[in-house]
Amino acid sequence: MTTEILELLCNSMKLERDRGVGELQRVLPTCTENERVQFEVNLVLLISDSETSWETKHGCLLGAKALIPYLNLDDEHEADFVHRIKAIAEKFLTDIEVRVRMAAGEVLGVLCGKIGPAVYQDCKEYVLRLIQSNLERQVTHDDDGSKHEQLETEKLMEKLAGPSQRRNSAEAAQIFHDTAGWKNLETSLKCLQAMIDGCGANFQLFVDDELLELIFTTLTHTNRFVRETGFYVCSSLVSCGSTDQDAEGRDSVSAMNPIYTYGHEFSKHLAQGLADNWSQVRLSASVAARKFLTSLPDDKAREIFYPELLPRMCLNRYYVAEGVRIYSQETWRQVTGTAGKDLVQKYISYTVDYYILATESDNHAVREAACACIAELAAKIHPQATRPYVERLLETLLVCFQDDSWPVRDAACMACGNFILCFPEESRGALPSLYPMFFCNLGDPIPSVRQGAASSLANIVRAYGQEAVATVMEKATAGLKGVMNQPAESERYPDMERGQASFGVVKRLRDNDPE
Image (cartoon, rainbow, N blue to C red; front, side):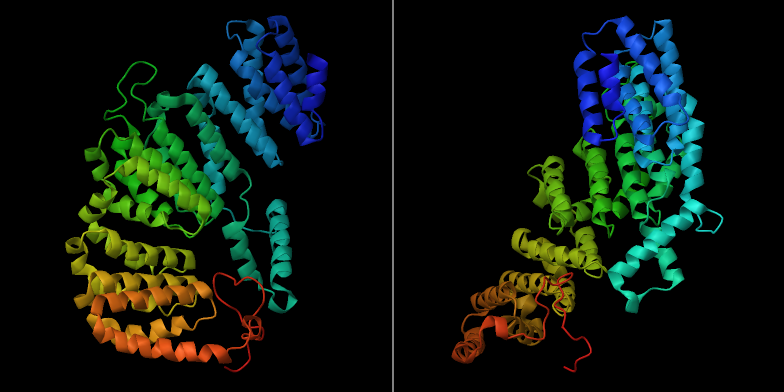
């Protein structure tokens, strides 16, 4: 057992190391205690060698992770192995190789699951200090690692932008600060998450102001990877307080439960994460929000947090990133059940305010989703609930109708059509502004935009009958007469790029050409 599996675990190829872990998991249930102890001795010898490669460190840590659940803690040799592997894993949290740091954190998490919160108690000060010390870093010439990362970032920027658009050093430093990996910070946070998961309900004892302040700091960090990892830590923190009873039989739904004690702080930060510009952060916040709300005992407890969370969860059901959209739709089903429409009506003022705010986002995907949600208010919510907000919503849609991004224009067009059909009298005043935009979309180069305009004009006719027919028919007749003179589609727009439009905005081949 020992030789073959260790050779696989120390292989330079990841597939072989993974195969080694699989083989180890296969033989562990049936191996003798002596075989296991001998394997532990050899594993510690390999990983303790200062000259060993990162692949060997990684493989040995993966092996230790698989081995720990089978240990007999009453055995002196295996207790010694636990002590030594804990010290090694703690040391490797600052290893230069990220995969080694990740595996080291996972080992500490499994140790927490096997032994209990005493492992976290021993490592707490060191891990939290690692997180705190890495939260703010400066790119200095004295830091060789950071300097190297910035140089690599600048090379990537030059490749993406081209030499003629090279950024200055200040912009390079900012992009580096916002998007580059942050050394030990992400892996230290993942280590904390693994230990929280390992401790389970017993981790509630360690939740205090100091820990939460540290975690909440990561949720507003300038770096998106840090924010993403921070929300996953939050989801684990929420989960540790969501079981019915802890290991000692105490009811977790109590004053000591962090969900109740710090619920409003959680809710405030989750609301920010659900509206983050980066899809990965939005997804991690969605995971935390689902765990947060489903961990609460009943609808009455959840309703306290609905004004902040419900509108953002509702909008994310239409978010363009598929992972966020599908996850949010399932969250909506789990949290609201069949009462989703009623809850939106109950919190309609909060919902409208957030939708309007979302239409002002720098992110075109958020603006598009907001328009789709506004359309949903007209189509699905009881008219009496929506009617007081029709004027504000139409004003918002008129702005979106002129957006640079065609998917936003298309979504705004469809939403306007919905509002006209559902609220014809309230929408009548906007018709002089809307007609030219509908007709403009009717001649747009993008087929789906033309189709949306046609659908909205049909809604105008349904809403106003004969008084709208003449206006629409005049334009439709003129358009149909012009079809015979229309060149082939591929030749109509020679000044546009042939590739996919970036961010939904069609780009001219020569940006400086006169209109």
